[in-house]
Length: 317
Image (cartoon, rainbow, N blue to C red; front, side, top):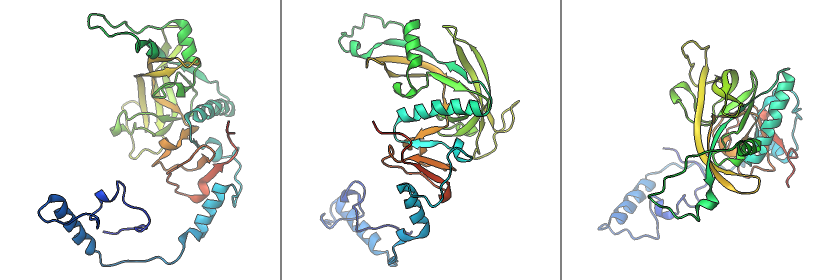
C-alpha cells in the first residue's frame, strides 16, 4: 500500500474519529473503540518506508504552463473560432450560462453546416401552484385533480430556459443533423447510454403534439467514443435510440410563482456547454473553461495544450 500526500496538513475527512487511531482517545482494551484504536496504531506503525520530496514540483514546466493559462497569460494563444475549439464544450459554473451558450451554439452550428434548426417541444402537464397547495387542507375524501394545462401556460413554459425546471428537463430542443448532444440520465448502461455520454444527432422520428407542436418520438444519437462498440439491430455502429421520458419537477415562472410540472421530453441537452458538476470525472479534449463562474473544478485534463480558459467570456452581473 502506498500513501501519497501531506499528512501533517489536514486531518482526515470526518475528523480524527474516523482515523486509524488518535492520541486523544483512550486505548482501553476492554472497549470496542479502544481495541480498534490499538489495531489502527499497530497498522500505522507497520509503515516503515517513507519518501520525502524536497523539490517543489509546482514549479515544473507543465504546472507553470497550466497556471499561466488559468491566469490568462497563455504560452500559445489558440483562436476559439477555429477547430478544435469551435465545437469544444465550455465549462461554466451556473446553469443559466450553460443554457444561453447552448442556445447560441445551436444557432452557430446550424449556420456553419447550412442547416435549419428543427424545434421539438415538450408535452407538459401542470398540477397547480406549490405556494397555493400549502394553504389547502388535505382531505382523504377529496380526489386529487388531474394535471391539466392551458395553451397560454404551455406557451409560457416553452419560453422559459431549461434551468427553470427543477431537474433541468428542456422545454424545447433545437436540433439538426450532426449537432453535439449530451445524455442526461443513465438509461441503458449496457448500451453506453449513461449520464454525461456525448454524441451527435444522427436522425429522429417526430410527430404532432396536443397543441399542434412538433414533438420527438425517437432520437437516434451517434455515441462519441463509447467504452465498447455498440451494435443495435438495424442501426449503424454506435447509433442508439432514445425515447421520450416523463420527468416531474417544480418550474419557476417569470413572476416567481412555482408550479409542479410533469414534462415529457427526450433526455438530452446540446453539448456546447456544461456545468462544472457534470464535467467532473470526464476526459474532455479539448477543454474550455470559464473561470469567472467556476469556483471549484475537478476535471481530468489529458493534454495540457488542450486546456483553454475564458476569463471574459461572460460578464458578471
